[in-house]
Image (tube, rainbow, N blue to C red; front, top):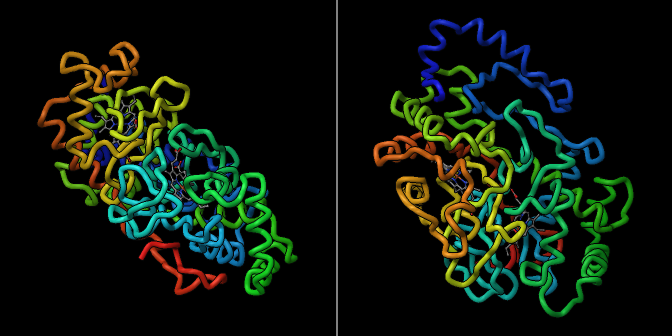
Length: 393
Ligand code: HEC
Ligand code: HEC
């Protein structure tokens, strides 16, 4: 049994002691960011996000690189038919996701749930908020050069991820240009635009445009999209008034029920793959990372902005997610996907302990993980002169 913790009580007894111990334990030796106050406390396996974040040594931050990355992120010039930008599916109005069950790519029109027409993408678009911290463990160690990306962890680092949507037929590439040519085509297009030449020179020292530089600039921009000051973070950094008693109770229930066995660390994710038996989407049966219907534990931050949930958007709201967990737990129910046997379901999910009251408490805790204070800038225009964000209007 995990112990019940009320930090308010904890602090009366151990306040100063706990703070000083945690300062020593939380080694930030490999931390390259700036100004890292280290008063974060850890309850079991949960803790605040760091207040600053690491850039990899081989792709350090500069404002010029950020501005280039932002322009590229919003510019549909990166897509074969010049109709889709990264922001088409990762838009600040939808918490840098797209608010859809599964995404629609090339040839689509509109944004979010109203988007129509485009090629079907088999998965739900995750938020890119806080991907700077992907892979962070309970001790707040993480390595931006190997940060796991995608529902199946198949890319490592924002840099490695960045060109994959551009190469993908349905997401951005489309029919006209061959996969082997698309990066050459877009570098030539970008090269022909003086404003981009200047931006590449400012960011990288000369005007050479290549896939590696595009990836580095996109990664730099995305890394800055951080929301690390939720009320949960404030509480874990020592502001005992940031959470209500009910929300603290919800956190304890989240821990006691067993959610924390997978949703751990500052991102509320172990970044491991697990089989749960989420129902298939009516249009797609997705068997996950290695045919076992297993998917990465997602972050639980900013869920208020990123519905619908799961790798295929199966659940519209948190209550449906929690009912699902109740229904797969031993004693309460069975697999919710006919392709998954009960004994394939991860033991930590089978062992969850949930009743209806627990569900209400846990939802009140999950709502404390929301932070509205992130960069929502939508540029007025992009250097290509194309429609900002692609065909989203
Ligand atoms: C058509 C919609 C669409 C477009 C356009 C798109 N994405 Fe995505 N993005 C997705 C989907 C869907 C996933 C999940 C795919 C998977 O897990 O297999 C994803 C995943 C990601 C992730 C992984 C996040 C995580 O935590 O694992 C990052 C980062 C990302 N996209 C960045 C980008 C960038 C950069 C671009 C532009 C170059 C882009 N996306 C274009 C839909 C899109
Ligand atoms: C065995 C590990 C495991 C346990 C235990 C677990 N989860 Fe999950 N959680 C996952 C995985 C993996 C996914 C993604 C599954 C998918 O998309 O198919 C997920 C998805 C979610 C989502 C959807 C997030 C999103 O952005 O789509 C929420 C919310 C969630 N879990 C909350 C909880 C709560 C609350 C508990 C405790 C009652 C819990 N989880 C227990 C592994 C786990």
